[in-house]
Image 1 (cartoon, rainbow, N blue to C red):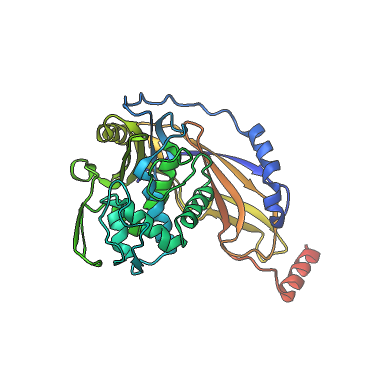
Image 2 (image 1 turned 90 degrees about the vertical axis):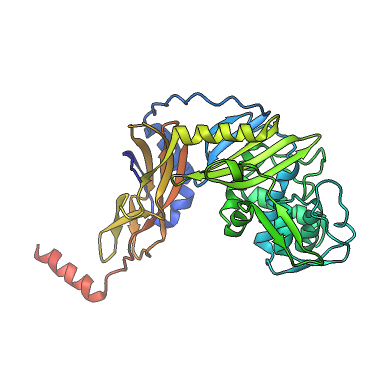
Length: 391
């Protein structure tokens, strides 16, 4: 993977490690003053899509590559089921046996045709939910995981809040219309990117076919997402339609190590819009290594330690989508204390690194200690004092 140059700006915190978190607001103020103005790159011309709202992001960084009305609150129909599946996977077991209640049986709209009273594994319900878009499966899952539909919906909203989404509110687990059930293209893309980090979810939504044999009958599902057959690298995610929401699609694909996720809401041609958005992303952006986790970012002074310098690293590589052909450097802001006092434990948080891309978008990560530095022993201390006196 190619790398790009970075231009560091060091912002000393002027305090000890234990006061790091309280210092962030202060250091941000100084950072704004010290950080030079970045030259904002011109955005490539965007695709012409038919939807009321659309977006495409790079999944690992959640970086927006293109969007139209991306923060407009809209109904999202069965794309709701992405959150339903994610919450179920995080709180249930695939081998759970779920009994179909009268509430789940015969729910209106798309269905996997559950039988009243039958017992079926959660795994099969999830495939029926995501491939066949079963509204009945959504209710059965909700009652099993949340104790009731209402309880499960609270879990969905709690998950949205933990993801930092402020323009999303769930009322149902299946997306049947309610005026208070809404999201935005941006929020839905973030939900889908989070869900795709779950290996089981990714496996389900990338499946073209599935045979369910765990219930009272054998069921055969074919994924409604046509992109899985006719778009290179396509690997998800979910279709949706109601009269109120129009045609909706959450889509994803991976090429050359870059995973993109997109959303089109109230579109006249969901698959055409999806292809245009993904073609735009892959044609104009590529993944590049900005900061390696194996290379120290900065060194800080250590007081009362066996060593007097400590190297700080990022916890993981920072890889970001970069416009193809971009030859400039990324600006970074480093926030660290003036001095650390021993002992300092390896991998403990010591500061922050913020990377700004060509469009002034920022990614902030923790800087951690590259090694453990203990306080010197009594003999070490005496030896140091002797050297000091002798000098």
